[in-house]
Length: 280
Ligand code: PAF
Image (cartoon, rainbow, N blue to C red; front, side, top):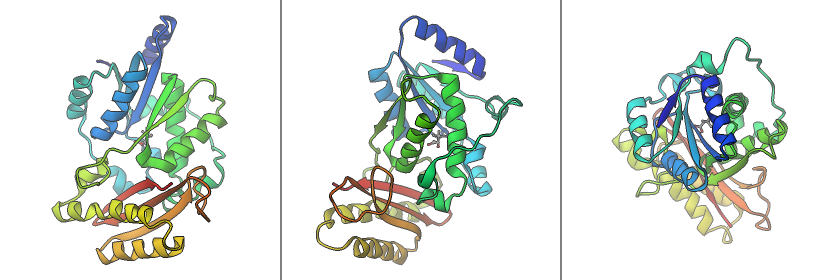
């Protein structure tokens, strides 16, 4: 695996690979890699000639400084994992390399998706995600971008970013299904911060989303959401939302005539977890 720390060196390497007719797959991450990330790398390797993974903890997407300070870091282990699955390139830039003196902060017109659900509870988060992904895409210039379904809203936002920045013909997004622990908990770097009791409870989020899926046709959406929320609260979660929404734009669902997704965000202890399940 080749490790690049500097954007211009990576871009020159990519240019050469493209001249040689190679396709480039890109997996952006913030590190603390788990099987979910590694599955994205595997999918990229199965479609593309060169797989680039980036590890960069992007400060501009954290609206809560405590969350940024507590974000798990395990670079050495991450590198071992990436080598073991045959990732071709790791991009490991510093903050100054991403946000250079020439970097101009833009505002991305994301529309209502920016303020729904995650956007409502994490103001500014999606602008930060767009800022870093825009910069990373301009450095890596991939043919294919691999994203995890676990961050469902982020996938919609990044699709929008690609439209807004006129990259529709250059980059194709592939959304890879969420990888789960044996008990159903969605894999996440944040799971590392759960203590034993919180870890046992954490699977309830997936259970509630699954229960919504099973009962979708037997009760009203409002009842399903309210009951799921209440059960999570009874277990001690602080619940930001349990929502049943349209997959295309996450507007609230009215009936089952369109593809729907159930999404939840809830905090146990100091760890905020999100998950989602496709419904129909
Ligand atoms: O999903 C993540 O890990 C991050 O939001 C991303 C896409 C790498 C941007 O920092």
